[in-house]
Picture 1 (tube, rainbow, N blue to C red):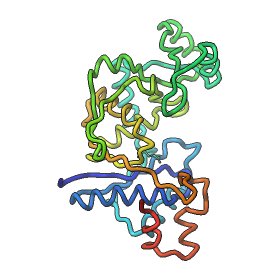
Picture 2: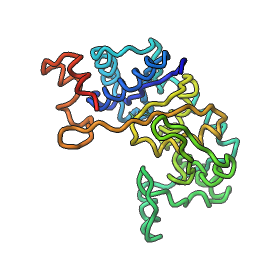
Picture 3: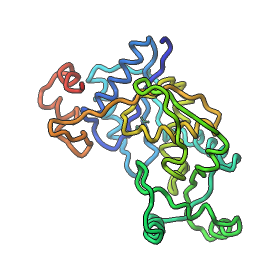
Picture 4: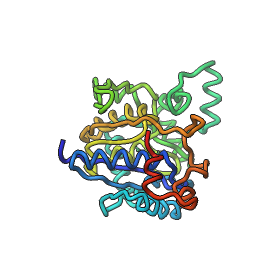
Length: 279
Ligand code: GLU
């Protein structure tokens, strides 16, 4: 296939490790093999966790590994207006509602109900604020209560009808819009969420093949629904298996030993580290 556009989209919350190197190489290789383009995106909407020094380090580590990406790097924090605009479109379609619940409220409601179905992101939101009347919503907003915006998954399902996405390894996957429940599309502290920003960015950047770890496979169900609601094109997906360390554990940013920087300091050459970052 020609013209494939892939991307690597790390969050600058720590140094890159071998798992990231694998993911970046996976994306870059697909673009190269398909004669396409490989993009880099910095996912830094969460200003409490992201640090500019890690953003610099990402660029440094990828360049040291010998990975080449297109010069224009998209930083999410520079594009908040794009996410606000998408959120307005969701609002206009009547598929989001304000949620005033704190984590505590949600835990309490789940305990009261006895049990809650679990999604990939934890217990599914019990829907407390979905049932608030317009008057109650207005009163809480006027009272200055902080709120997130949640997707009304049942309404989205009814609007979109049956949806699917195509994964290079798995083939056609039917979407279950209810799988993660009413997910947050705009957090209380920022006017977006990972789900919304990623869908908007992939569309605006013209990404045709979304490459990422299979830990995000569940999120793709949500993303496909958002693409439908926002009239955005459906890219192809290539979810890769995760890279594990010698103990069978996932690489994590807190695990300093296997960061690209640590390996470089130990004296490994880029080609050796690229080899380690293979499955
Ligand atoms: N920023 C996400 C992460 O670092 C990746 C999101 C994606 O590839 O869609 O895990």
